[in-house]
Image (cartoon, rainbow, N blue to C red):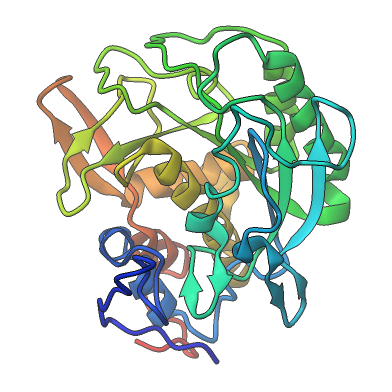
Length: 321
């Protein structure tokens, strides 16, 4: 059984905290490490679920993606929706997809992402994460691959990392929207980062789309909104960049999904679909953030509060307090 220490000791060469979270400060603020401790032996931290990561390509020689867990390889599928083959390797200027999944999924030498026991599917769907041109068709193709393989791979969440770095106050309809809707109806969590430009009057596409959950950020160490935000943000998650916020959110969604299943929580009272309900739970249990820059209120992810909520706000009998 894995145990999780509070010790914040950081390896000066890797920046990681051996035997614990990939980012101690952020995980404590999100109460991920507290959730690991309290529900150890009850929840399995993504085991049996697959997270699809759609980005600008992944170098599978990265040690995190070479990992083999007792129940199988960390990476169980790859796809390249640009070329229509299984080679997901990044092509310059692509660079981002290799590491974006560390925050959600790393399980290497005792260093853990949020849902560290999950499987991963790596999908190259754009040429570069910060979009320079319209790549909506290959993004839609990547999401279609997820939909077509969702049942076979048990994909329960999608980290859709690309963003256009514009300030959108309303949706921008594209061919991607039909795939968003289809995945939502299948019960798959799909979320995207709002952007890191410090806009206070809009967020990036495709996070601004109705069926893509828009993830913004709070300042690590503070319950304070920062980076791109507007009224169309769905949830804030502490991180220095919203791509990390989104990775944390996707992993947290897999943990909450298992908690809902294990507890028998009647999620239908919270939303039309399971992703709608999970977002509603994260919002109702999250930390209230008053943002003077926008005069808006947001909610910041508190994973322990969300999991406690579905377990009836008390530790189940087999959990460790």
